[in-house]
Amino acid sequence: MSEMVELTVNGAQMKASKGSLLIDKLLDENIHIPHFCYHQALGKDGNCRMCMVEIEGQKRPQIACDTPIKDGMIVRTKGENIEKVRRDILELELINHPIDCPTCDQAGECKLQDYYMESGFYESRINTDTKVHARKRVDLGSNVMLDQERCVLCTRCVRFCSQITKTNELGVINRADHSVIGTFPGQKLDNPYAMNVIDICPVGALTNKDFRFKQRVWFLETFDAICNGCSKGCNIYVDHRKEKYKDDQIFRFRPRVNKNINGFFMCDEGRLSYKNEAINRFTIGLLDNAETNISNTITNMFKELTTQKNILFVLSPNLSLEEMQNVNNLANKLNASVSGYSPNTFDENFKDDYLKTNDRSANRAAFKELEINEEETYFTKKLSDSTLVIIIDNNYFDDNLELLKNKKVISLFSHHCLTIGNSNIAIPISSFYEKSGTYINNAGIKQKVISKINKNEPMESITTVIEHLKSMIEKGTL
Ligand code: SF4
Ligand code: SF4
Ligand code: FES
Image (cartoon, rainbow, N blue to C red; front, side):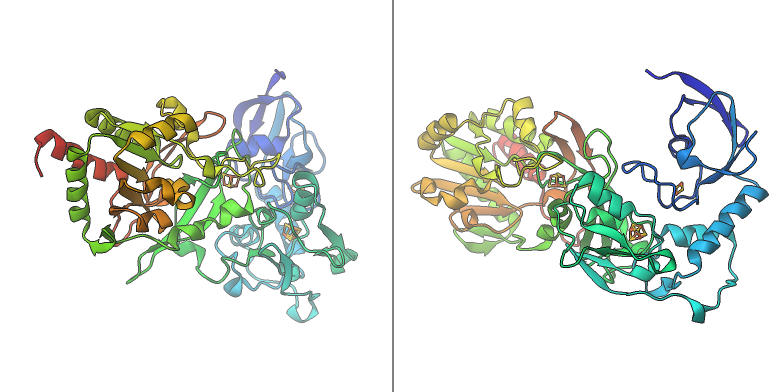
């Protein structure tokens, strides 16, 4: 462990490890320090000069992103002198900036805008006619749109492609005030993590083609969740909005920092998987493929549960820990079997050596925790013995419908699938992001998600369906 030393920042004493970067300490302590080019995942570059601080004993201001901490260091981030220095640097950054905030998709989450507003520097000394212009719409590929005029040339995007994905698609082209970001001739930005450059771009130079102009960000509400695209369990923000006269809708996923799981990033496929939530939703209960209301489906399910002798529940590895536990409890009451057999969620082509895993499900580790058997031999034996199969969000049967022949089938799904059409009773349930619960990732890390989605007509959760059934069974009546 590195040696701890004392330093003083704006009069407050604190400890930090000797030689670590001053900017990291300031960020960890939530001490405001404007910066463009430094990023904790990409390290220092020292090109923007926005992170200037005063250090006692130093003649000139220093950049915090390239200052190692020393014992007894006295640092000031506030004060007339240092704020003037940063304001002058900001003015430089703005010389050729188009100041087109009203039409910029980054407005509301733009560092340049934030620093400009807090600087109180509202009168521009720059003649707009003399600004150097550049291309406003450069389609880089991978859903990323570049506005070269808005770029502050921090090179975070370039360093992301060289250090993180090692694909090197982006570079700085030309010199001096004609410098712009671009791809090499004939190349596109094309890697499975490319859209992260949108988040790390501190200004509106890189925007998300999928999201831009759909919403103003200040209208969105956000909750913390995890991605269910694979067993990595990347931490994300879910940005959603319930507009007047409309239903609550998810507009985007963004990566949320968790240094123990996904670091600062997520894959593009996981990011765009928010779209799956709204597509092809299963919303109306079915009895022998005829539409009916939910309470009718649950009543009929109760009848089947209390008359059939050999019952098998087949669960999805995407259910929450609590849902699995609830099904287990119900199965115990009924002397039924529970299987987590789900080979269909494995995809070797999806896996890489960064974040993506070969298991496209969020909670397979919970099967182990709850001792739910997921082996093929157990599943095959229990399925052949069963007269009633209850399938919960598990798509394995879509490609194996013949296995359901001559059996009573009850299915609970959030999205339409072939299994529903082959069920005697089908009950619509809430989707992954509409419910709260606990998930265990491939490294055994448990994460709790609390959904804030507020649908006009929320679907029943599995937990509610099971609770209904348990109370019916306890009362022994409908
Ligand atoms: S496009 Fe954005 S991230 Fe890339 S150099 Fe310009 S400002 Fe920085
Ligand atoms: S790596 Fe997996 S969990 Fe992470 S964003 Fe991609 S699909 Fe989602
Ligand atoms: S953040 Fe320190 S120079 Fe850019």
